[in-house]
Every structure is written in structure tokens, then in C-alpha cells.
Length: 417
Image 1 (cartoon, rainbow, N blue to C red):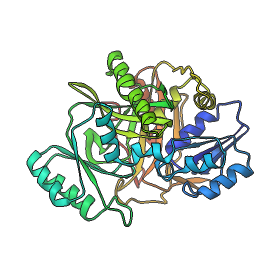
Image 2 (cartoon, rainbow, N blue to C red):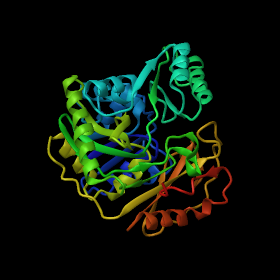
Image 3 (cartoon, rainbow, N blue to C red):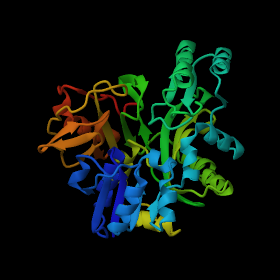
Image 4 (tube, one colour):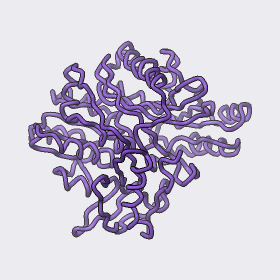
């Protein structure tokens, strides 16, 4: 089979590394890919949002299946366009992807179908939003309604911080598209440990993966601004069998069922960002694609042929997911300044992987045989181990060449909380 993966980041590199293991694939392509992906797949210079170009390539190259990584093309309707052209694609339609594309829609959906989440109110008027914050107090959570590449959430510890978030989101419109009315969702702050659960979904069928824990804050000890993710590990040992069963049934399955009832039939990856409260697991957010960086630590634990999993799920068959024993951990190497404006085109030192470790490229490009930075999150260095401690030790040992490297930083405490 010929397979196309749409995207250019670490998540897509991880998907390609797993697909590379399949003996059924004769042609593996990435559009547009990155410097690291180019070692394992044929990169084609077509932007993720160039649907006409992607469809033409899929037809010319006789692509049997397309897998979409990033959220922007999903919310713009790439799956709809491929389906109109009778091209097989593993991705939710624009209508289903709204579960991630609008925080307001997701919150109303969860309320309607009794899916546990934080209390919330939606605002478009900055003065009304500020009055609500003054009344509720801090800590409080402010979320931009639309897509924001993982950066449109402010967990405000003070009222001043919350009011500034309103200025940024509703007045400066930093996360809004040109011409659209900005909207924010203001939520109660929930106490507890966060974890993620992804599942392969096709209509009413839900096949959960293992749990993962992402570290969102930029700096050690969960300090600094929210990012797209600075590291992760899987599975999460402090999520009990009972709580996992509840999450699968009362959150993942109910969401798939609800989307069918809404006429937004879901096919693809359903991601739930969750928090373990005193009342049990609650949803922080939904994504409608593989999480990043969780994918980079979940897929290395999958025993199955990933292509066969996609094909089985699309055919309505149980893929009978099997998982390796042990733990996988990963640490993100970011450009100095990330998640704000950051340095690019910085030479990366050579990293030597050991038997259990691996390197995933996110924001890199190849220049004369060397890799240079080409984005905020540059690499993820991961490792499998018998325990979380052995996995993270292997990661940090592999990261040593970057410890003194100029232009990069990474957290030193992934897996410790």
C-alpha cells in the first residue's frame, strides 16, 4: 500500500516511524514533512492546507490511505474534501473536528450529554468577562475559543493575570482569525493531576490507547507559560483501573455516541485531556487528532502494526490493541524563547541514541547534511524502559550533548510529577 501522512511535526514523525515497521507499505510519504522525517519517508513539498495539491498528489501517486496529523487542516475540512474525491482518509470531518475547533461547542456538547467537565461561561464582551472574573476570583482558567496550537489557555493564579488574558484574547485578538469575533470560555479551576487518553474511533466503536501524562509548562516545577507540551510519559501509574474504566465509558464512549446523535459521525483519533479531581476524572479539553507530545510516547509502546489498526478501525473491526510492558518517556528540546518568539536556524549538535532511546524531529530542517532548528519545539528525545525512572534516565543521558548547546532548552524534571 501507499500511505500519505499530512503534517510536519513531531507527532507526524512518530506516526511515520511506527508505520515504517509495517511490511504492507511500499510507498510512505509525508506532506510536507521535516528534516528528520525525510530519513524515513519521501517528503513532498505540499503545505498541509493545500487541499487541491494534496488531493492531486494522492491521485497521481495512488495513495491508498491518508492520515492527518495537525488540527488546522481537520477543522478546515480536509477529510470532507478527500471523501468527495473518493480517497480513503483516517481523519474526522470538519463537522466532527469542531469538538476541538471550538471550546464553546465542546463545553455545550459536554453539558448536553452529561460528560464531566469544569463549570464554565462563554463571553465575547471584555467588560462582561472582566466583571465575571472579579466576581469569581482566582485561580481561574481562561481559554480562547478557537485553535491556538496549545497556547490559548491561561491558568490565572491572580485576578490581574486573568484580566490581562481577557485583554489579549478579546481586545488584542491574539488568537483570532482576521474578521472573526473573538470568544473566550472562562472555567472554574480544577485541582488534581492531569492525564491524557487517546482512542481510535469509528462511529460508535471506541478503542482506547494507554494513558499518558503531558507537561505543559515551559520550565521546571511547572513554572512559566503554557506550551504545546515539554515532555510526556506513558502509561500513567496513578490512574486506577476503575478510573480508567469510567473514563472510557462515561467520557470517550459517551462522546462518540453523542457525536453520532448530533450527526457529526466521528472517525479518527479522539483525545481527551483529563484531570483527576476528588469527584473523579473530568475533561479539560478534547482534541480530534493524535496529541503532541503524547503520541511520541504512546506509539512506541504499541505492539500492533499501526497501518493494520487504521484499516481495521475503518472497516468496523476490533484492532485488538496490544501494548508492551514498561514505560516510554520523552523530553522536548525547544528553541530559546519558546513559546514566544524564538531563535531559528541554529545548528543542532549530534545526538547518539542508545539501544532503548530514539529521537523524534519536530521543528528541524536539513542543511548540507546537518540539522538546524526550524520551529519552537525542535526535537523530542524518548526512551523505553522497565520503569519510569529507567526510561527518563535513558532520555537524560541521551540529551547530554544538548546540555551546553546554545539556543536550546529543555525541562530537567519530566516524569517527576
